[in-house]
Image (cartoon, rainbow, N blue to C red; front, side, top):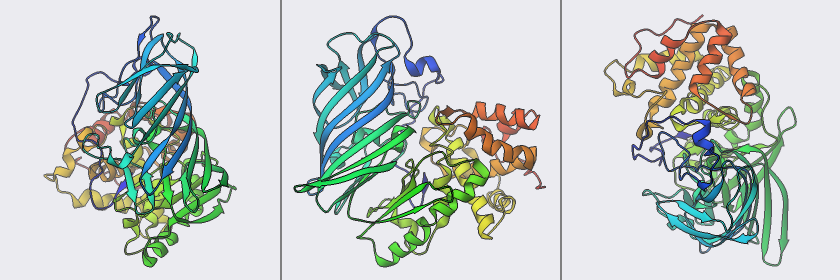
Length: 476
């Protein structure tokens, strides 16, 4: 995610747990049957995600009516029980009319802000691969959970995009990056409307007065990276140098100057992917692109293979920097996702650093000079330095320091371990954790292995100390 004017709508509840996320807490392991945990164990967001099962696939068959902003349909969730389950939770906020587990009707109720509690007719044994079909409807833009909505209504439709949560406004899920899955998303809209989502468009079939768009994401994807946009769009297509298909979409309602600036930026997606592949390794997905809907929000989101861009980024001029930022996330955040939200630096620090790399490519500055400028522009008593990029807290998860101090720390790491180990590290991390999750601790160990250096003091100083580092390393 990258902000433009206002802060992200991420929760500022300051919730915390002292227990770290572990494989056991994430999967709800255990040999005895019982309820699955109502949270996955994230230290920042205790109610996010759920325990007791692991999702492998979401199959959504939805109908959306732009005139009323009404969304309805059925989500079929395929998951494997990681413990015996007498009941389990899904994260969801719309109205549910029925739930079936393995074809049998199941009892269900709601709890808390976004918990759908499902009690199957029979206990689900550990290791069983189950299907959970949830039929539902509602007006997502009117659902105010924790004081905001992640569904943005537009004059001609709606958009689901936000971080760290947006899934439970439009489909039931295990809503945490630790449980990634593949997706089929079919959306029926009135004829003349278009539906944009992640991955490849498999079909667009019109019958009667509606068109069904079928999108498929066949690589594991975190729930917050699933996106949906319905409206009127101008569509462009292209390919990267290696042949990855690119689909971009621009709202037809954008002001002409904004649309021209957006196209001048987003149409360089293939070029920027090719450039970043030189640093991060092969592009990890089989589709790419972005969309610019007619929304008033002020952020961009790295929705997997189909980046969401607010028009505000292109209000006065083209902005390829934001495109480089969000495309870098396809490796740092999408391909390798966070294990817990406290490690947000692995996403935003490296996406910010990609802006430095792109600036060098465009001849507007070197990473060393840009990082030094950020370091020098904030005096030691600036509150900027009180936020720890390696553990900023839920309220500061998207603070400027996570992005800017985080990117400066990466250049400092480069200066500390040298170009050879650093450039190897940039490719080794995505390669070793492909389609999975990672932590800062694991990243540090990899950096130490490749450089042959103990980096404990470095990481403590740059990521975990609420003060300005006394010295910025000299570039080589």
